[in-house]
Length: 258
Image (tube, rainbow, N blue to C red; front, top):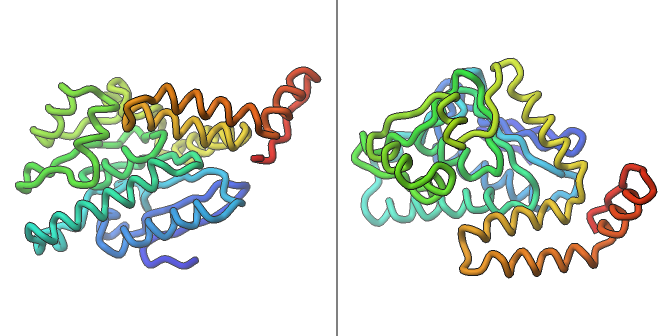
């Protein structure tokens, strides 16, 4: 599938998505959002894709925000639709049954921060700056940032970041739990791929259910029931039989995702 503003590549089960608007600091315009939605539909539909790595072109910006020219032209009605559409696309990422890692290679601001928040794991380069500066434009985050940021770093610090609009550097982001790892720029993609390879070597159905259960802890009244149901479903899978047999026979399991 071809995209206007993305470069994609599938190798050894890892689907790499590069937001390719380097001249615009990889800002999220309407076409790019449409491309991201299409790329994740491919992730859902293609069984050869086992995990996703998403990053930005160049070494200065992951995504430096939304396209301000487009935003300046919206009103109340179109603004609501703008936010709802973005929320729907990013929910597709958050609920993706395959692991998604954001490799944050510089500025991740506004919609770029929200994109990273929707991913399951975040790895940042040392030059990363992460924040939600929408209040400086008379706006608030609209793609889920007010909901996901407090889940990761707590209500108080989320209030401070969103209401001041001030970004945090990579090391502070790591100390807050906003990113999992901080590495040198040259090691960023390698680190993200290493984590993905470790995950996709595990049982795919179990990994998918982990995503469901962790998300349920924030979105349902009884995440424990989701966990119990998912545990039961794992127990009737072929992967469970293979995993336990492999352990008892002291060999590596060969999972089929069944």
